[in-house]
Length: 68
Image (cartoon, rainbow, N blue to C red; front, side, top):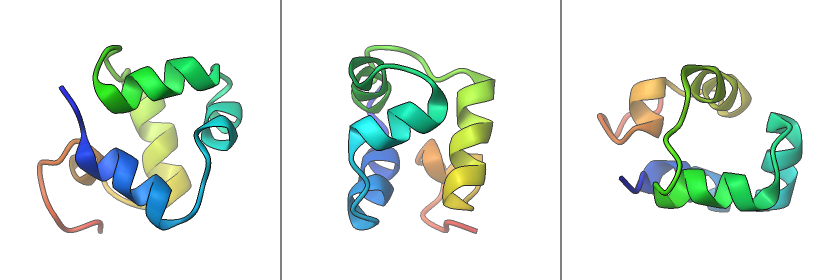
C-alpha cells in the first residue's frame, strides 16, 4: 500500500530519502520501499516518523488529511 502523505510531507519539507533513512537508521532503499508500500511500516518506524514530522500516525497512513 502506497502512503501518499508519507511521501508528500517529506517532499514538502525538502527532505531527501537518504536523510530520513539515516534518522531511522535504515538504508535509503529500505525507506524508499516504505514509501512505495513494498515493505510494511512497523509500529516503531511509524512512531519515529510521527515524532519527526510532528504529525499523527493516522495522517502518515492516509487515514486523515489533518496532520495534527
